[in-house]
Image (cartoon, rainbow, N blue to C red; front, side, top):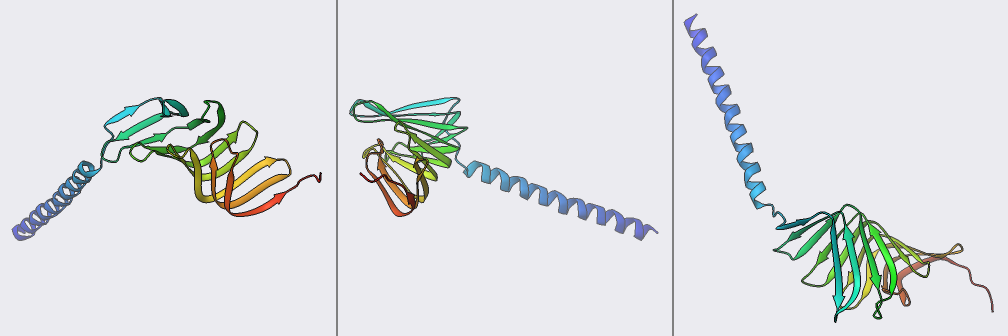
Length: 184
């Protein structure tokens, strides 16, 4: 009977040590991973940013949250991103809404992601999932699928898109769709 009692105690101790060993390893792995994941050095709620070129404003960006990561120079934007675009004369030309976005200070590229909608002041609407804006070239572009609505009977689709911020010059890489024009 003593042997049975001793074996039971040894099995309980062994089981405890095994479980304790697993827990320690899991906790240390989580701690090691937590230390290796970069955290933002700056956070802002809500966030507003003005992008300028040669002292002239060319975009205003707003979001509910921004986290800045120093090692990459990237501002991560979440919680309803909106951007207003301006031409070289400072006139408002269009606005954008998206689920999230990124502003890369080092290369001057701003990216909008998720349910991206751009509405120009002339009434054109652009729909896509990812859209980039270059601060240096003042161009808007994507390699993703796009839908462009110019009027009730004028909808174009394509993959790949590039335009100036005024939407005066538009280039759809692989276009298809319908456009109805009246004969003059």
